[in-house]
Amino acid sequence: MPVITPPARLTQVVLVVALLLTIYLATTPLEYPVISDINDKLQHIFAFFTLAFLADHAFPKHIWNWRKFIPLLGYGLILEIIQYTIPGRFFSLLDLGADALGLLVYTIFLSLLRNSHLQQDSRN
Image 1 (cartoon, rainbow, N blue to C red):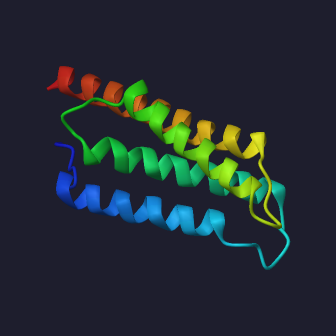
Image 2: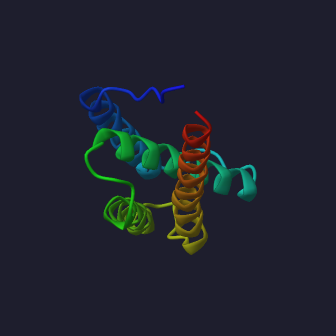
């Protein structure tokens, strides 16, 4: 079964929207206390997994590697630095770690997906 991938141009637009939305959410002062620290970290993991997926598919001519990973992690670091300057927000190494974990989970997911495709292709 072939893998269905979204068109690169559409994915690039969605990636830009996702990056802008993430900046907005990260820089908006909190009006409520964080309900659960674990929930916050899961949101970071999910957000950066999603950004990795979008970045990977937005530029399909380049494989997923450190050249896509490092800029996204740098983006997470920049967001944490910006949050340090916003009242009620904080710089958090744990948030940055959760961002990195989201990128690593995507890397593992992609590797498993590729391996299952290779195994499936060898059976056909």
